[in-house]
Image 1 (cartoon, rainbow, N blue to C red):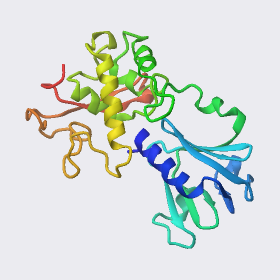
Image 2 (image 1 turned 90 degrees about the horizontal axis):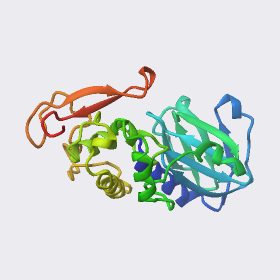
Image 3 (image 1 turned 90 degrees about the vertical axis):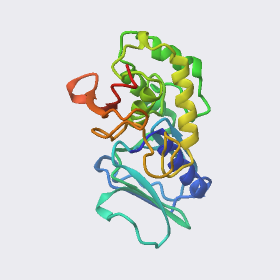
Length: 258
């Protein structure tokens, strides 16, 4: 599942082959932006911001979000794609490489001067140059009655965590996702652990929170009904969200977390 580390890695890989090069193909398959063609302009840089990817081309920025199913692939020009063309929402190329954004949850073109309109609301980025642990802690604790599982997913508090990290962090800190922030004993410790985990995974193709690179790479996420890797208790699954339309699956061990 794409999270901040996935987007960071995608941006890093795209930057390695596109930064400072001339755009030779610009094929956007999103109706609102289908007529946009920036071919001939220089791709200045590709960067990540939390779970958002920004590709800066001249006066404009290609803004994409992977959501649940999206991904960016890079191919040598002429190479066969690993996914069907009908899933492509954006295709860009330079003299040597083609990048294809498959099933992107969002792709839009914004004026570069207006980037804050799409990412300015984000809290400090766990993998960005603006990372500020103190501000992230202050953001999380600003609403003490909110469930910690919701506060961690709120990108306004800190940017980059998704549902996998939310579930794993709560397990590793022994905290139920539904516990109010005010009742979490060590919010700074949870923020520090979030930083360590996402840093450790940012250059891995397979994420792990258990330290294992094969087999059980997650403690609780996706393991409903299976025994806890620590105590053997059956892992439970529920749903948590700010409203019925925003519910996300959550996993926890009823013995290790309270």
